[in-house]
Structures are given as C-alpha cells and as structure tokens.
Amino acid sequence: MRSELSTTGRILSLLKKIHINPAYFIIPIVLSIAAAAFEGVGMSLLIPMLGGFLAKDFSFIKEITGIGRIIGMLPESVSGSDKMLFLVLLSLFVVVIVVKNVLRYSASLTMSYLGTRTVHHLRKQVFSAYLGFGKLFFDRTSVGHHSIVLSQFTTEALQPLLNVDRFIQTFFSLVAYVVVMCLISWKLTLVAVPVFFLLHFGVQSMIRVIRSLSRQSAQSVSQLGKKVVEILSTIPLVKSFNTEDIERRRYTDISDHRARLEHRTNVYKQLIGPLQELITLFSALLLLSGMLFLLVREGQTTAPSFLVYFYLVLNSSNKFGVITGFQSNLANASGPVQEVASVFDSAGKHIVPDGRKTFPGLLRTIEFRDLTFSYGESRHILRNLSFSVTKNCVTALVGPTGTGKTTIVSLLLRLYDCPPESIFLDGIDIRTFTSSSLRSHMAVVSQDTLLLNDTLRANITYGLSDVSESRLNDAVARARLETYVRGLPNGLSTLIGDRGVQLSGGEKQRVSIARALLRNTDILILDEATSSLDSITEKLVQEAINEAIRGKTAIVVAHRLSTIRNAGKIVVIEDGRCHEEGTLEELLQRKGLFHSYWEEQKFA
Ligand SMILES: Nc1ncnc2c1ncn2[C@@H]1O[C@H](COP(=O)(O)OP(=O)(O)OP(=O)(O)O)[C@@H](O)[C@H]1O
Ligand SMILES: [Mg+2]
Image 1 (cartoon, rainbow, N blue to C red):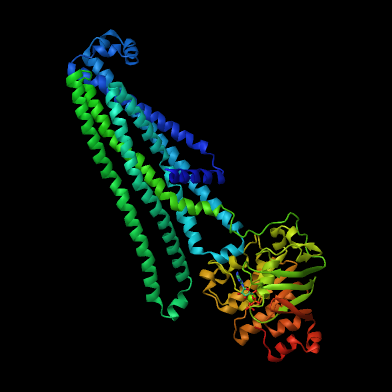
Image 2 (image 1 turned 30 degrees about the vertical axis):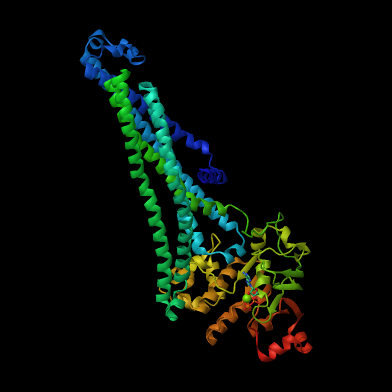
C-alpha cells in the first residue's frame, strides 16, 4: 500500500512539476461522483418496481419520500392507476440511468482530454529538462534510454490518471451500493463488507508483484532502446566486422527477457479477475444463505429487496474489477513513473550554471588562468593551464592526441563547467556571463561534424532565421561548397541523411564551416578534424578555413600545417599543460617540443 501511495505521490509531484493543477481533475471526478449517485438512485428504484410488480399494487410508492412528492404533482388519472404508477417508476428509472450515462460520458471525455493534455505537457517539460542538462550527463548516459523515457515512459507514467475517473466513479458506486444494501439489510451488509475487504487484501499481494515486475520491465525496455540506437547508429561497424549474428543474439536476449517479464506481469494481472470472481461468488453464496435465513426466520426482508440485494452483490464484482484494475495500472506505471521522476531530479545532471551578465562581445582578450579541469574522475585532463587569445588574432592550439585541446574549446563554449576564475573574457570570469549570450558571439566548427537529417540548406542555416539567399550563397562559396552544390540535382534542398551520412568527410567539414561562416560572429572556434582527406579536398578545406579565420578572433585546434602557418600565435599543449607558446618563428627558433613536431610534421 505504501509503495502504491508513493507511485500516486510521485504522479502528483510530477503534475506539480509540470504546473498542472490537480484541481482540474475535480471536474471529471465530480461528474463521476454524480454518475455514481445516479446509479445508486437507479438501483434503489428497482426495489419499488419489483415490489409493486410482484404484489400487483403500486399504490405504496406514494408513501415513499421523493417519489411520493413527484406523484403528488401528477393528475389523479395517473396516480390512481397501478399501470400508470408503474410507468412513472419505469420512466424515472430510465431517466436516471440516461442521466447517469450522460454524466459518465462527460466524465470520460473531460478525463481523456485532461489526460492527453497532461501527457503532452509532461513530454514537453521532460524534453526541455533534457535540453538544460550538461553535456557530461549525455556523455555518461544513453540516447536510447532518453528516447524511451520521452516517447514511452511519459505516456505510461500517466496512464493511471486516464482511468482515475472510472476508479472514483466505481468507488462511489460501491459506496452507493453499500448504502442501498444497508437500507435493505444492515445486518447482512455488516457481513458482506468485511468479505470484500478480504478480497481487497487478497489482491494486494499480486499488486506488489506487478509493481516490482513493472520496475524491472522499465529497465529492460530502456536497455532495448539503448541497444537499438547503439546498433542502428553503428551499422557500418556491425556490417564490416560481421557482427550481425552477435548483435541479433544480444538483442534477442534482451527482448526475450522483456517478453518473459511481460508474460509474468500478465500472469498476475489476469489472475486478479478470476480470483475476484471466485471470492465474490463465495461471498454471494454466503450472503444468499444469510438472506434466506433472514427471509424465512425473521421475515425482515422481502422478495424484491432480496433480488436487488443479490443483484448488487453480484454487480459489485465488476466494480471491484475496476478498482483492482486501477490498482494494477498504478503498480504497472510504477517503473515508468520512477524513470520520469528521475529526470526532474537535478542530481547527476551536471547542469552548467548560468551567469547573469550578458556578454557584450570581445574587446581585448580571452585568458585561461591556471585552469585545472577533470571530467569528474580524479584524473586531471588540464593542469594549471595558462595562455591568452588576442582579439582579431588567430591562436592555434597544437599538441599530441588526447592532451585536452577539445576540452579547452568545450570549456570556452560552456559545455562543461570550469572552476571559478579560470577563464576570463576581457578580465571578467566566464562564469558570470549567460551561456546563451556567450554562444551568440561564438561560432564553432567541431571535430566531429554534427549534422541533422535534413536538407543542406537547413543544416547550413541551422539556428538562424531569415537568411537571405545571397548571404547563404556567399557562405557556400566561401566554404568551397559551390561546385559540389551546383552538381546536385536538388542543390541546397538535397537531403543529407542521418548525421549527414550521404556526404563525404570533406563535404561534411565544409558544410560545418559554411554554417559557422553564416553566423558571422566575433569569435570563431575551429576544432580541425584529424581525418585524412584526399589532397584536392584537403586543399579545399584548408582554403575555406584560412579564409574563414583571416582577421578574426579565432581559436583553432590545428592539425594542418597551413593553419599553423596562418596563426598569429601558437600554443603547444602537452599533457594538459601549456608547454610553450609564441609565433611560428619564435617556436622554431626555440627548438623545443614544437620544433620536434614540426620536424616530424606530427600534428596529431
Ligand atoms: N566526456 C569525457 N569524459 C571523460 N573523459 C573525457 C571526455 N572527453 C575527453 N575525455 C578525456 O580527456 C582527454 C582529453 O581529450 P580531448 O578530446 O580534449 O583531447 P584532444 O587534445 O582534443 O585530442 P585529439 O587531438 O585526439 O582530438 C582524453 O584523455 C580523453 O579520454
Ligand atoms: Mg580533439
């Protein structure tokens, strides 16, 4: 019971997080309660109907409060005839049942509307929460899992909410039943109610198992999602290493585990219905004997009320089905609820804190001062790193692979949080600026070209609106993409596939250069890709880079000699430290580490 409450509590706190006022749900709930009340009235109308029918005399109904008053308002010709009185009762019964169904329909409609809107809100909020998480969170988790959370768990977590009106209506119908049953015979009802409680506790043990299976099942769904994304995004690797069979087997194992969990959950879920029916039958028989006893020995009950009582007991089996069904829904949602709730828990999300100041643009220098950084583990990637970048000057970062060059760039882009007072822009700590204002002054060409499954145009103009055709064509030309685009039947409207798979390495790089050029920012950050290109493409990319950085404040992680030659300053990074810095001539004269790289032409 406690865990169920905690699932309910989690759902309520999710509603609060997404700013859905639980009070909205009062509308369908009130409609459901009203429907339940009408059901109770309908059931109690059956007693005089059956009673009058058996006694062939309906005159007694004039004495019944409520109905008596209605009959009093009717002409004598109606109230004096048994047939007419029966018709009045029947019409009342029909009206009550019609109203009950209208209320029930309205309750379901408002509930499903609220439910689908709430799921939509939750999805939206989960997505925007994801956008706020730091890159380190994504480095350490799987996209497959996140996509399952967004597409599946958000819906499953709120599934019980979609049935809450039926649950409440059924609950109040049961209360109405108990009231009518008490009116017929409180003694029998005193026996009946505990029997139903017994039923409730019997079902609880199964609910507990379903809850634990739901959590395991949520984990296996997430694993399945991880595997799908992992394999489908590395198809060339899988094919070239002939691992289709291994991957098929791995996927089958996870999927098989999930199927088994689902089957086990169903075993328990399906068992609840028959178990309930048997217990209800048993209690109905028990009550039947009690009823007969009272009827024969004490004469307290009459045949019609006996029939109605029996009908109520049997009908309550269905009602209990809805109640336990809701409980098993709640238990089933417990895994997804846990996963969705964890998205809103800020622990482990590595959110990069945002400053308050707006970065106005670079006036003089970017300074790295005694910067020490690690990705979380004890191993320091950057150690006491100090160097500066001057406005309108190209600064090249060179050094062996894995020494932290990309890390430096990522820290400048605020993809990870740096220690306080370690990076300064015109003497002001980078952490005091808002990330969005900083990024609006920086354009980046990253080492791994990140492309969307969209057209060339959409990829080049990504993040910009109202880009004129002439500006776009200019950027395409400067990125040395013009000839390539002209050769395409659909030109810039060509779709480039997932992550730009339909482009060559050099084309990808130039699309990403065109994208950065179009942004026309004061700071340009270029993390040159190390992939070796053919000499013609290499030349094209080099030309594009050299033209892009000329006269700009540029930080270039340089692997190409030509880029290094064009740099105003070269910073040599070795093992996370600034080993030496200076102009090309100075470094070559010093005959230090850079000189030896130059000699070997070894720039990672
Ligand atoms: N997200 C991460 N989490 C943990 N460690 C990381 C992460 N990214 C990089 N590293 C580690 O940090 C070190 C520096 O990586 P970085 O990518 O900055 O090197 P680099 O100088 O850019 O190398 P290359 O020239 O090959 O691009 C490496 O040892 C790498 O394993
Ligand atoms: Mg790198």
